[in-house]
Length: 455
Image 1 (cartoon, rainbow, N blue to C red):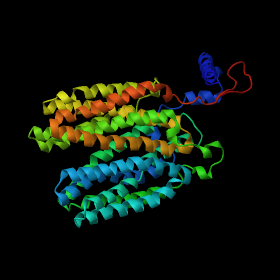
Image 2: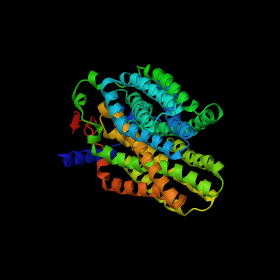
Image 3: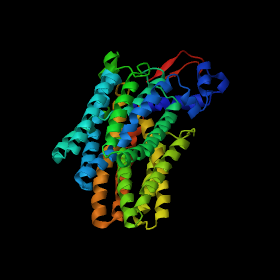
Image 4: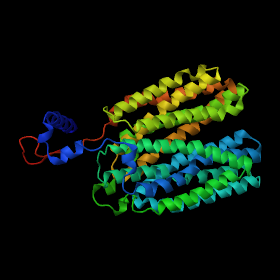
């Protein structure tokens, strides 16, 4: 019975905690004496740099896609509404198709999915550029946008899956203390990408040619994706090549905890989308549109800073408690946004909201790795990434409509509504955020009896 297994595991842990350290077996003493998790130890993981560098290049285009598309479509159609709709379609398409791509990567291997994926994505983006410059009908641009979004390479989840394999040392489940540090490192990398990506895309579109941003995105996707796919030694073993029960795993979304985390990440996406639109509207109302980038950069900097700090802390509380605490703080931080009237105050509140996002994101990724078997690991990560994209697309649309009708203050209500609803669901489903008890082996701990497996 599940309850019996939980009680047995807890009883074992209680008894084991009272045993003198010197009487524990050498394997247990070595585990307790392991170095504290940190970035230096993480980056010394064998093989890490072979997928980190190409992975960074391959994920950079993701941060350039939306802004490049908006700038090109606005230039060719003269309508921000049309440009935003095309970008939103791209985000929704990516959110719906990303988990399927992750599942295929788990089943057949990352290289088998990534190589054709980057070829299709680059071709779709080039097609969109040609259609836009030729002033083709809007429906044709929407069709190309659907294809471009559906084929966005999910390099971030693939890198996270490689971290899990590198730190576990095998496809078996383990509780490496560096997994939380790796999740923090990836969060910081994502934020850094979204700091420099839009700047690069904007510079290319405004300084070179309106199509230059998308063309650079297509080229980086192709080159970075091919180099990343070439790193076979660090890639997870495909399920089709594995043996045992994990080869017959159902979808990652069948795990209740993954569904709860997907809802939580929808709320985080609502913060990203709502802040982006509302900050732009706020600065225009204030007659200072030029500082919108600075304000959003402050928001992103808070996220990066919190991610860096989070990865250096050895946490004593469990990930479920950390997630609920961080998400509650994020919801509270969104409350005063709608009432702000001064630019400096908005900057400070944006920084605060950014500081609260990273802990929630990082803990969510750490939890999902513990909740799902290795056979569906990449798919699980893509469900969370896709949820952020879907929440962001919905928030951009809703916040834009509210800002048009009632001003930027109404738009700032979107992050609050999104996080409040998601926090309520997350709190109600918190019981699903506890990983299934792993087999616990008690060897030479109590009266030096033979090993006993508690399952």
